Length: 434
Ligand SMILES: Cc1ncc(COP(=O)(O)O)c(C=O)c1O
Image (cartoon, rainbow, N blue to C red; front, side, top):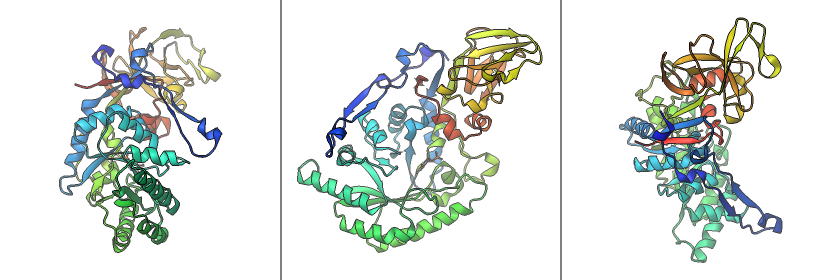
C-alpha cells in the first residue's frame, strides 16, 4: 500500500495548549497542560509508519455486535490510550459513524479530546481521577463526560461541582449521571463490597447525582479457567441487590471486556466494554476459549518501514551495541529505521522477526533507540528501500506472511495490548478509510 492511498486527519498535527485555571495557588495558576503533537503524516519524512484501516475497525464493531444478539446488550467501545495506539480521534469518529452506542476512556483528558473532535455519544471516564482541583470536575461536566465513582470524597466533590454550576446557571439542575464501580476481585479500583454501604449513603445524600450505571472489571476473563470470572459476576450480582435495595436503579450494568463478552454470554449484562477486539486482536487463543461465537476479527494496524542500509558481513564480525551477535556464516544484514523509541521492544533483540519480500527475517544484535538490524542472508535480492513489515500482513515477491500482535507480544515477553499501545507517537499514523 502506498502512502498516497492513505489520508490523515489534519487534527493529528494539532498542538493543543490550554490554560488550566485553578483555584488554589499562584503556582498552580501558572500550570499549563501541553499536548505535544503526534508525529503527523503531513510532516513525516521518515519511512517508518503505521497504517490503520478504519473499514476494519467498523467491521470488527459489527462482528462484536453480532455476538450480542441474544443478550441485546449495547456496546461501548474502549478507546483509551489513544485508541490502543490507533489514534483515538479517528477511531472514535469511525465508530460513531458506525453507530457505536458509547465510548469508554481512562482519562479526563482523553474524554475532552474526543468531545473536541466532535464525538457526541456518551463517554465514560473510567480512571476515576478528575484532577486535584475543581477545574477538572468543571471540565468533566462541561464536556458531558460520565465519571466512574467509588469513593465518598469523590462523590461529595462531584456533587458540589454540579450544584455550583447549576446555581450559577452553567447547567441544568437535572441530576448528573455517574457509574458506580464495584471491586469484585480485581483489587484495583472500585468500592469493595464491605465499603458499599458507606458509599451508597453518600450517594443518597448527593441529590445532584444520578447512579446511571453499575460496573465492575474482570481480572481473569482471558485465563484458561473462568471460575474467577464467575465468582466476580456472582459478587457483582450481590452488590447490585444491595444497590437496588438502597433505592437506586442503574440503567447500565456492565462488566465484560472482549474476552468475557466472547466467552461468557451471561457477562454481557446491559452493555459490554470491548477494547482489543475492536482493533482486530483476539484476547485469548481460540483453543482456550469455548466461545459463543468466534468472530472474524481483522487486525486494523500495520506497522511498516523500509530498509535504509544493507551490508555484507564476514564470519566473526559483530553487529550492534554490545556486539551481542556475531556472524557464524557470511551474512547480509539490513538496517531499518525503527527502534525501541518507536515501540520496537528491546526485548526483541536476537529473538523477533520482521517481514521482507513476504519472508521472515530474524532480528540480530541489540535493538537500538532508532534502528534495528535484521539478517536477510536467506532472502535473495534484498535491497535498499525494500518494505519491511513489523506488524501485520505483507505480500512480497517471495510470498505472503503476517506478524500478529500476539506473535510480537510473545517475542517481546509482553501482551498484545502493550505492543499496540507502545507504538510511539513519533510513528506517524496513516488512515485508510474506504
Ligand atoms: C475497565 C476496563 N474495561 C474494559 C477494558 C477493555 O478490555 P479489552 O481490551 O481486553 O477488551 C479495559 C482494558 O484494559 C478496562 O480497563
